[in-house]
Image 1 (cartoon, rainbow, N blue to C red):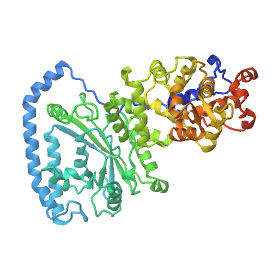
Image 2: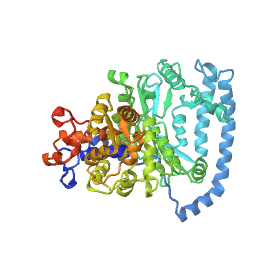
Image 3: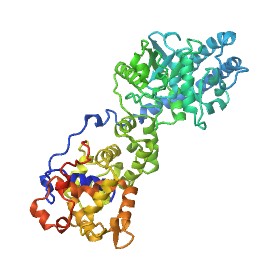
Image 4: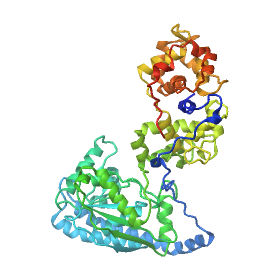
Length: 543
């Protein structure tokens, strides 16, 4: 017995449904369009397939190009280091004032030129479209889609604006010094106030009136396969200043740059890219976007408009995936599920169903318990029935259909989370617990026996041979259950509240005929009658 069994109670309590004849049940409740599956199932995977001819070409080109390009890259980085050192000499790691004066005038053009030379030595052929806005016109650049570490080319083309970087990156030899020359906003993993401090620093720089360099931010926050634009995080839009969107395209026949959670590693992508004759990339600067008064007060609204604008220009859809989906993917892999099983469109699910990360992560553990034995990490009707310890019946098929939103005969994790939140979200109040106890206490002696408990649950679930002894033993400390024991269990396990009251819902909805009620001793002696609850409403939410 678990949360899914609650939903069985819900399915059984649909008004007008016959208790023992599930074939008379009404059609499923209509779906909300907002919960339809996303247009892109998994934007965090990239599978580049190499044929035999392509492998041979890469091998022979690599013999020549790979060592030459590695040497050129190393030489360019070493040449850039002195300029970065001059730019950041005598400056603290966390800057309180921008680098200005002769140091910036000398080092900025030199580092920009060497940055372009670096990507040229890697084999990139860059095409730039549009006009770069000045710091006064747009203090912030937002770049999308973010799909690879090579996206840093946007920073070079934009004139080396500041970026957000992890503080640990500053300790990397050579690379750390070059990053410091960009005057980055540093994020610390160990500082609990780092997120708040980062936002405050972005606001301070973006509203400095051109004193600080422009900020360049990848609002998606993680890499995707460029098949869609995922949720934009609001950090770049909180200052409420004009932003300039920058689009990135890699129009190559062979994709050797996409770096996602499932696909080629960093080293593999570098080798594949350096072994190509050239790699094309397009950087397009869109017109500056000024926020409205409403968008200044609502950065999420501003971010959504910019995302839709960029997606339209790229001719790709938008989804509500976010970095938290990547974390769920990793958790799914640790639970021996396919990694993509953890994808739920976290932004949409958390907002509409009021679920946080911990709640969804807990549901993933429950889901893995059911789906780990099935192929593909999806729940079929057989696994569903086995986990609930119920026979495959019309009642169970009705419940299964409520979870199976796309009617493909299986339940994925996203459908499971939505089903639990929409179908299994009972109100567990003191009043409900008292009414439920009276419902089970047929002889009104202040205790519930296993026979009384079994009779009510069998009727409410529509399964006459249901064995509830296991659940009864979890509640009872002896041969019967007192109110305090019942209340204690109900408070610790609020998911059972709907099961405990389903029989009363059935009576209230006049599901039983008078003959059925008279024939049932559990109802004949129970003083909780439907007349006293004519105005009560079920807490089942329409899906």
